[in-house]
Amino acid sequence: QVQLVESGGGLVQAGGSLRLSCGGSRITISINAMAWHRQAPGKQRELVAAISRNGYTNYADSVKGRFTISRDNAKNTVSLQMNNLKPEDTAVYYCHAPGPDFWGQGTQVTVSS
Image (tube, rainbow, N blue to C red; front, side, top):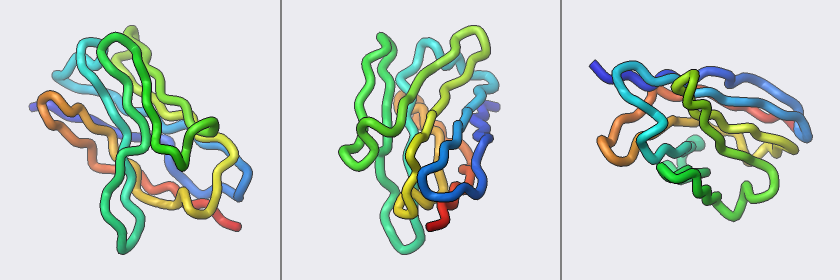
């Protein structure tokens, strides 16, 4: 059974940083495009950042210059470094493998003002 498991969420003050990590079980992250999405209360789930199989990255305009997506092939993980966090970044963050359409269970990120 394929699993994507996120970790690293939590509560942080505005301006702070968090690093989310997503580990894969029975899925090789290095050969898959991967993405991070988020869903805030009362809002639709939105794409935050993505990384292609070749390492090309793209970001939502709202996080450009603050968030960085990367993968560690040796550890079979994909990470999201989030800097200069804002209260509007508060959401549940999900790891996603678009090709096979696998999702993690989500991790809560809360940014206080």
